[in-house]
Image (cartoon, rainbow, N blue to C red; front, side, top):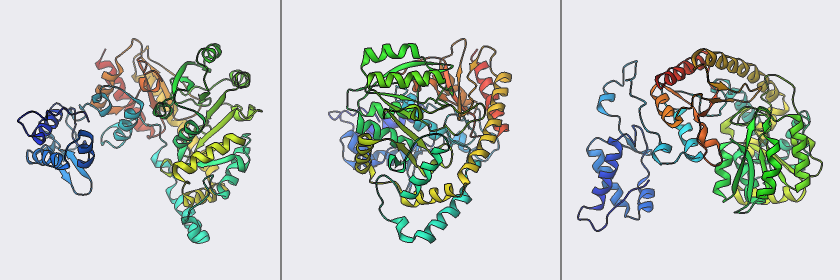
Length: 489
């Protein structure tokens, strides 16, 4: 949090801090329910004694601007005008008219957009299409509870002990068989279990790249990958995407220009656009990797969520020379809170990734791994994904129908054959940061398109998730979005 304190001024530092925070609250920059930084953390950031922050928060609380909650922290209070209506069934029209954290920071970044998306997903009254998350009503909590109980009875304390960094043998065996059914070659000793696909990307970056290296990605691309690469000092060269995936004629020119060490790609049900790389471009990409001795990180997070068409060969299955590292996850197909993903790699690349994993967090939870292995061995995961695909296909179709009905006539969007999201382009262009705030006022949220571009490119694009809500809620959310767009025309 940026705060300017004048140590030479006669006004005590705690009062300067209090006045600074009060202005942010009154201007709506710190909206109701915002959690202020912990006192110790803010004191360290500002280089002041912790008691300075404690006193500032106490002054704000005395003025009714914040509320301290034991064990949770200090939160901006709901204004009296809204608190008086808290028990009413209809919120006031300006309830969502607050500036979000990433806009206040002055730069729309991938990291701050992710935090905003997580926050909006829990805001009452907002229909959020922002997060790329599966439907909460489809999460098989009871089935997984039974799997956990079976593992605890069968394995006892083994499930609660340390384990190998590469993961437990049962899950790697189950994954090897599972991937074989998808024609993805993955021997047990080529599979490493990670704490979600985000850690998988982080480990590849940490183990196989150096600060200053260049990675080529689709532009736009997954914002979590942008975040990971930038955090490690990696340069990102973006290549545009069309209806068949990354625009291949530009790729070799970028390779010669930037001399990248790796290409990061989401060839199937690309996030955020939903498009799929054509078979011809897949073969050409493997040929280029071989020609230039490039590593490819293939993100296959949503591969199993197919609603129509035939499955295309993965880059991993086309690779005969060890150029492809394959990353997958159970966050989109099973339980996002499980935080279990995996990497498939061979030889010295696998060994370097394994060393990075051991250094990073030692291992992923054995209990969760063993329970997941049991769930897969019983065939429950395949059945669950089949159910999800049927439901998500319906929700996708409802969103497409509602968009045709409620959005302005010249608006364009992709029609994905799988995955969780689609990509919207506005014509004529509309300032999407302004649209983002106006949409929240109308009770609907989306993911800003600009954060998915490696260079932070502006443009009238945004991403919508169609999987997380019931058909009725999807339809209502698109109606609200259409109303927002028409109000800005």
